Amino acid sequence: MRGGLGLGTAASRGALAVVWEAALDALSLSTSANAAELQAALVALGFLYTRPSVATVQTSASEVVTVGIDVDVPRVGNAGYGQGLVIEDARTNVAYFSHAIGTAGGWNAGTAATTTGYAAGPDGAAGTATRIAGGAGAFGTYSNRPAPSAGATSYVGSVWARLVNRAIYPSIQPASPTPTANRFSSTPGHDLWFRSSTPVRTASSAYCFQTHDPGASVDAAFDFAQVEAGTWASEAIVTVGATATRAADRLAIDASRIVRSGRVGLALRAILKGSIGGSNDYAADPYLWRYDASNYCTINRTTGAATVVIAGASYTTASGFTAARGDVVDYWVEAGGGALQTVVKARKNSGAVTTLGTGAAQGTHPSATSMDLLSNAATAPLSAWLQLAQAYAPGRRIAWAA
Image (cartoon, rainbow, N blue to C red):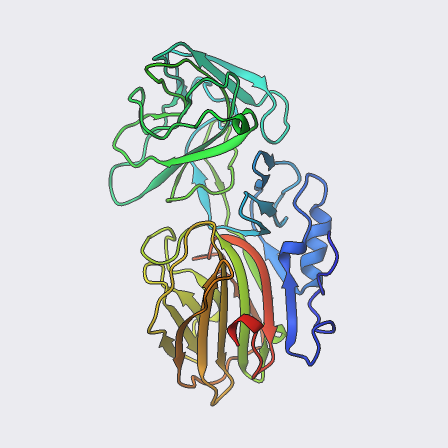
């Protein structure tokens, strides 16, 4: 774990402007051996972290950690946008045999040759990757699991790949063997493991993880095949002969660390996994925090406006805010404290500040029990890499929102 966390105190901040903080981007990246370290770090910060399932996490452009992330073990990852504590909704991988692509009972054979157990995958585990190779026009193995219907639900397919022969064009596509434009580019960087994803909403029953190009051969290694409901690919979910579900992450904290004199002054910085405003990347309006049904803050997933509820009194900002997947988003919310106004501000990628709204006083926020950050008891989370959380004394603000 890197130094300078502050471990939830304001001693280094001066003047008690910051009454509690958690620099989560300073936590060590997850490894197969640091579960206890990460659990202890969150406890020291005052958090109660839970996830009732095993999980995986991407820690670089070419690496995944699959060992040691057991039930209730936090995940600190980096998919190329920046480092942070992973918070995700529950997802189910409906593609069988995510490692042994091509295994009978989960996959149909294509015209390209399939070799299971070919090489180590992006997690370093021996013999998990599958090689698929063939001449021009060949297409590879494809999932025979029941596919999502072409209805209202969106699905996304993803796979990790590493080129064996660089002059090839592997791809993921909804159905075999029709080629699509969703091809992995043939670049030197793709000699390493990398992840690619594409929407797969279709009435077809087949999902192809290697397809043909009319003018080129195919030859690549694949691992972690995944098809899940949603518009963006979540962290890898391992399947073996059946579907598998990764439970949602929940991050709770004693509200008295954040609420002072009945007022919340909360700064949050996170790297978004889905986009906010103008899309339905999140299945429901995500929460910034929730204490109970009468005290919470949500973000409208399609407009980006914030709704703040304090002591049952609701205020929705007049303005919205948009941000794309991978954007680093800062939110500032101050609300409660009796006669004090509610103020909501945001910015992305350290750019211009947007004042979403300033509302009338809403009452007093309680602090007797715990509150959830970025979720509502593990539902409707703001799926993201959480980097920073800070609580400020009434009348004080984080510098960018001053």
